[in-house]
Image (cartoon, rainbow, N blue to C red; front, side, top):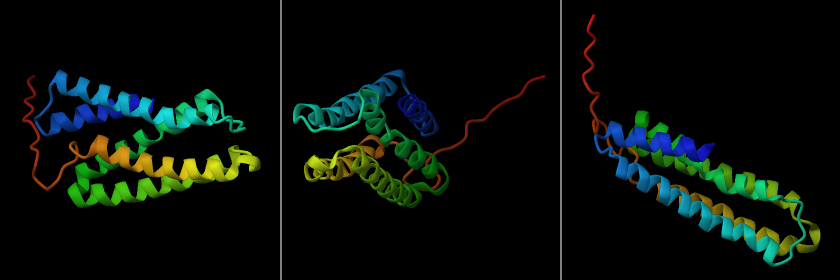
Length: 156
């Protein structure tokens, strides 16, 4: 769901900046999907390393998709507060996402493998913040007045 919201907001941001084209939107969607799959490889190592956990496949998919919530919040904040608002929102959302992932995954990974699991998750939280920046850095409004609202003509 958040992936679809990201693609819609990316299309909106491109349109507001008069840079929209179907090709650019498909590039956004495919690059986001590629980053998502790349991040899932990090979570799949739990199974490869035989770390005992109560996480299911859909849990891992959801944890990897939480970065899209951060991206959507940052991009929508940049429409009002522009560049500075984007970076403030990115910092706050990334820190809260990292804290959430660390606390949530700490309870899911058993104590037997806690040191390995916490190391992998803390790296994963930082990875989500980095991927959030990579996927949104070219979409936000960097300064005030970078877009103009298109004239709408209403006819009776």
